Amino acid sequence: MEQPETTEVSRTTARVMAIVDALAQAADEGLRLADVMRATGLNKTTAHRLLAGLVSTGLADQAAETGRFFVGIRLLGLAQAAKRRFRLAALIEPVLVRLSQQTQDTLSLVARSGDEAVCLDSREGSFPIKVLTLHAGDRRPLGIGAGSLALLAFLPDDEVDRILQQQVGQRADFPFDDIQIRQMIEAARRQGYAYNDVHVFRGMETITHMAGVGVPITASDGTPVAALHLTAITQRFDQPRRDNIVALLRQEAAHIEQSFMPVLDAMRPLLVAESRNSTKTRSRSG
Image (tube, rainbow, N blue to C red; front, side):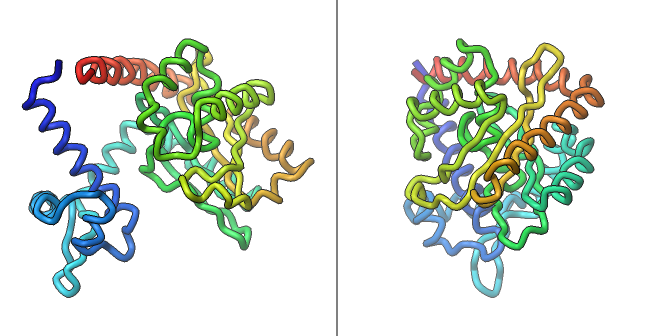
């Protein structure tokens, strides 16, 4: 059983991350203390104490004029460190730029980190109607969103089962149940790519004018470690354009695999280790 001290540390860490996530979502306008409380469910005393700690370490800033809180400048350095770890993003930046120019739609690169998908980079296309559902640094459980679904769908069945079982709590915030995700996995395997036209945020399922496709990027043993994710309005996925888009993404994914296989292979052991650590942590907490 998890020790009380460990439980308290985990709870505090989760609260701090909830605040950082809330500030990141409101990066342009910032948040008042009341906004942070509303977004995180924390009481005034706890929210103020944790915000003060974040400000003192440079992880958050407070505007003197308005009192609003923003993500801190120190996070820029941490983001650069993360990009160095996932150096695939820097290597294939020209690919994202080229694809966004060719398709005029929004392109993202997502990679697997443990049992989550993290967005490493995004590029907007020039099509007048913008659809941007992923920003660099965004994390989602595997299976949520087209790129994340591409990472999950092409894993072995036993790994898919483990992830779906262990991610039940994390997926509760999204409008996808296990039956629906498994149906999407079957469709992705049958088609060779992932497709999602359901809004990933709960309460917005009725928004049907956007969709995404995801194509996996694999290591030398066939394990998906990253994915190209294209998002557009639904009408832009009408045939034959959808097949043309998928063919283009597959072509670029094959080029990435051919050019950067040592980088992709280096990512895979890290993923295995993170998954095992995540499993151990959940086992201890149970």
